[in-house]
Amino acid sequence: MTNLHLKIEDIWHHYQCSSGNDWAIKMIKLNLNHGELVGLLGPSGSGKTTLLRLIAGFERPARGSIYINGKEVSSSKILVPPEHRHVGMVFQDYALFPHLDAWQNTCFGLKRRENKNRAAWLLDLLGLTPFRNRYPHELSGGQKQRLALARALAPGTSLVLLDEPFSSLDAEVRVRLRSELSGVLKTCGASGIMVTHDPQEALAICDRVAVLRDGTLDQCATPREIVNTPATPFVGRFVLQRNILPVSTNGGSWITPLGPLSSPRTSDQENFTELMVDEQAIQISSDPSGAALIQSLEFLGNQWLLRIELGNLLLHVRQPLDISFKAGDRCYLNFMNGKNGILFPGGIRCTL
Image (cartoon, rainbow, N blue to C red; front, top):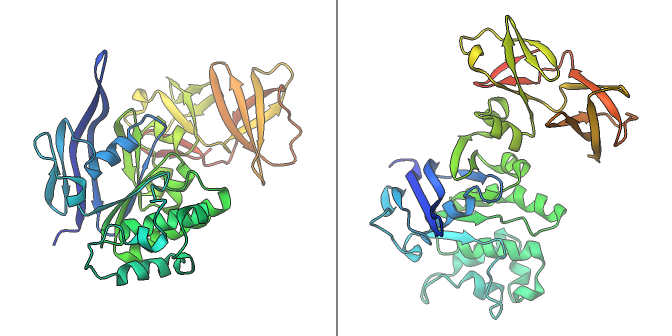
């Protein structure tokens, strides 16, 4: 038996608008292995929820195909109904039935004579047994999200789709629930695809992360691969919050807005036009006549995050807590010596 649970093959999808077809999804190819949790990560409007709806069967693709366990369930000619795909859905707003208690909500997708042991086991696994007789309005946000997950898994579902499942929860509950999600899916023998716009969340709990931009897939890789070798400047900027600097070549050096930099030895160096720089690889010096302007400072607990304007660039720079800079100060920027934080396209790393 193949380990492939879900296969998305060259999917395109559009919505009708006054100017013609507006492609929401373009040329998406993505696989999901059994037992894997993949995050769909991207900004608003990147196509994350549309792709989830295509997998669930709520939308029909204009081109391409979707396979679940080797069976074609979606194409321009085939559309297997959502209820026949054996896919569970966890919505951002929970979508619980207000007139049913927790036990009745969990059992809703089961047939009348179907064994309820799995439902009882899920309530116990998710810590909801003491609340089985409560109605949704009597539950906390975290309990509602657990109940929505229990209902999605109760029919023996092996594939669960989660649409921003933690976005409406407070910070403490969100961190606790997302740390539990992967373990719950593995205990149930289920695979999952989770939509999120939070890079930290995706990197923290997903086996792989698929980064979407304007309906296309920029990169799908493990968190470690994305951190070490971002495939595009967008991945470096959106996922890792790295700074993107324009570069030009001059002999054996690259010219950047932060000064010259020795270029790596690679046959493609003449084609590089952008450079990714870590937030901690930039040095700041106080200079009343400096070209850079500190726009704002954000307290991160153990560091400051400075947003600095340099020409038409907006750079993010992390600094220790004992700095004396304030918003409105002018400064001079250069590369921090000894910081292994310069990334070139193709995953080439340069140590300063």
